[in-house]
Length: 620
Image (cartoon, rainbow, N blue to C red; front, side):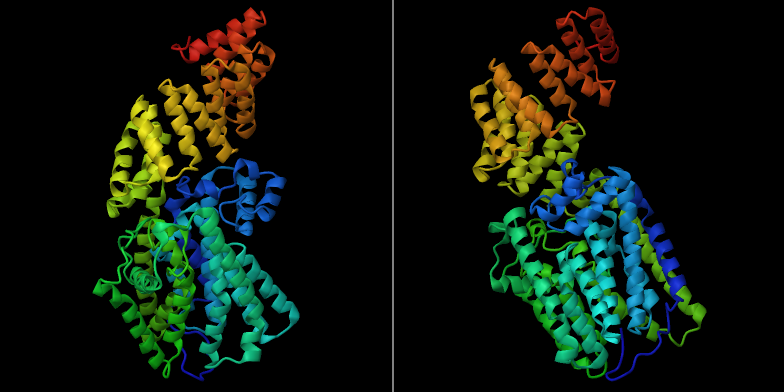
């Protein structure tokens, strides 16, 4: 990205100017090699909120994705529609989602190359390969949830190319196509709202001035749509996701200090991509600490320097404006939920990094223009092998939740969120005793952490220590009274301690706060059974089955309650549903045998009883 004021576009030259077809081939091949380890990655944190939930997998669910605010974790309906289609294609198999991310990233790199060629920026191919292989992109490509980044980048760059085509021939049709692509980008991720401002910067870089009629007026509707999208997302983050409270309270001066530090952090990771991690340490922003002022002051100094240099070349100033402008939504002036853990994340600079790669690609092309062609290609290949190797190694971090959080803790030991999430993963895999120390560390780092208190209480109950669990769960509810899961877990701990009447109140509260919690309905029903209120328990099991039809635990429990209420035929239906999904479920075989005996079908019952004993001799 380098041109003198008034200079007319010239064909790209220098390092990295492969023919267009070869450039795309090299990009796709390099990306597939670098990100091959990511293909075998499993679901990670937040992925369950993006991969389409069971209740959204129908055509009606697709309608809800578009027209029901809150049906998905964030209102990005195009993104979640793509996830919906992907689930129709490969279900829960993670390979497909990872391959889609990788291919979208490679496509974005090729569109970036095409955009730079369209703007006659030298070194377009090398810039595209820098974007494709730089390890700061790994978080966006190897993490399924960040398909929002790769997909939105593809549409963002396509919209930019379409708008440049409109600038050449100002036909209504071209404007409609470009505007349509921009709207689709907004429906994929809100950071794309920065595109109209970026186009104005590109126009100024090309021509040295902006004309109201030619440059600004066509983009006013884009600015309006982008502003509306940004305001809606900010409201959504604050009210529905939870980006508010003491952890987000910063005054205007503190936010200015934060913004300066964020910009330099991201630049440093582009220049020296070491110690990249999933969650970085969360800084303490303090206006009384003198050195924290150095970041924004140095930023203003850099801005002044590139502004002065713009008399010779506008490229550095344009790249700086593009970088900072695209980063604006995550500089700290607006709250986003991940600020609870850290003010920075690699995936936040995915789009912003494009301008820096363009500037570096152009600088390399000009600096090596006098070298023999073979020398330029050897140098470029060495650099890309280095970056590709770093990305390939970094991709391994996203293999599974254990690798992700163990690596994060090794690089950021004070990350309470990683300790909590690793504990959750250990509990889910049956390693409950191993989870407890991580929750204790999380609570040492952040004593008033409701999620860790709830998780610790649940684990202690599972370990047969409900009396120790109860005060942790009560504290979680003091901090967060409407915490439905904590109500459910406290109910279980109380019931296990013999305090069933108290437990029932918490199960009822859990269901009131979260009517879709099948486990709370199940526990409520079990609590009623413990107090011999079987007729009252049955409707709760019925609701639990409706909410989670695939749960063998719920169907087995519901079936036993029906059998107790002298409805063995209905009970048999529940047990047979379990065995349809899992013929090796010993408990279902035993329950079915008992229900069949109620009906006098002893021979059939004996068959299932023998099968239950074969599968699990300990059952009686």
